[in-house]
Amino acid sequence: MQIETPPSEKRYDKAEGERRGLVIVNTGDGKGKSTAAFGLALRAFGRQHVHGKQVKIFQFMKVPTARFGEHRMFELIGLPVEGLGDGFSWKSKDLEHSAQLARDGWARARAAIMDGEHFLVVLDEITYPLIYGWLPLQDVLTTLQQRPKDVHVCLTGRRCPQEIIDIADTVTEMTMVKHAFKAGIPAQRGIED
Image (tube, rainbow, N blue to C red):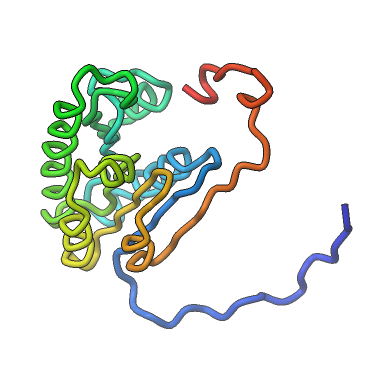
């Protein structure tokens, strides 16, 4: 490890542009995409009294009855999260049904983005229905481009389509450096629900 001297001057100038809704993408093969989006949702939800608009999380691959740690906590604080899918694709008994769930879920998510009532809409794991061909990419792009100007949208999932990356304001790619699962350690409840 190299020891550094703490900076004595601010390393950036204050941005001068207008405040507006952002398109934020968390993608890549590393852990933390959804976790980062949930942290963002909690931050926005905590400021709900300031902006006076709602925060909503849509999970494209989770079942509506999912009860992972984040669901239990969101329920306690009143942050709405909606499971739109039927779980991992390899567990699906009917992929056309899975695709229809994604399309129906997208209609609800799109309505929340466009209704002007939301400050932040999280589209968790939306990249999967896009890359599986279950959702039309152009409709998602058009929605992101035509949303009300103060609506923030955060999209998560591996292999985010380049077209979304191109229009996004902030893109973070999570890179796996090391993962316990590769060493044979199973997912830990409360850490990797």
